[in-house]
Length: 124
Image (cartoon, rainbow, N blue to C red; front, side):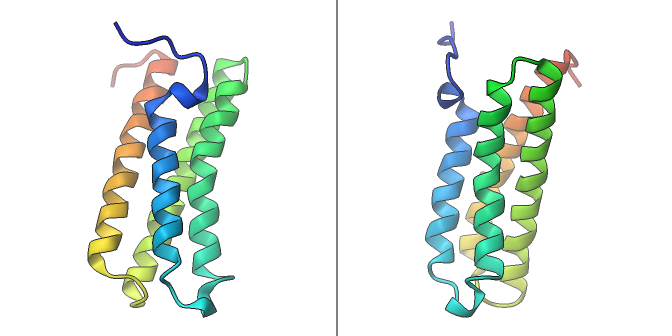
């Protein structure tokens, strides 16, 4: 029997999203300083938005509101993926490092989709 979730901190999706944030901060430290207010800032903001919205949604006492925050987290995740792909295309990030982050993002995305489906009562 799974442990009871008493806090958003107990949720695997939040934990993985936090790990993704740490990884994004680590990789963006290696990007050119000229991107500090460009892609670095954008990637970090979108990454931090994912666990923040999971936490905020968890705090809501309304299922619909919770689902909406999870959808916002999904959008931020896709925004992050796009920033990472742009960094790769313009040559400030290597394929291997981006690939690892995209794999992490995919895992978080799958968990978000599963949670949204569970909350909506649909299995598909």
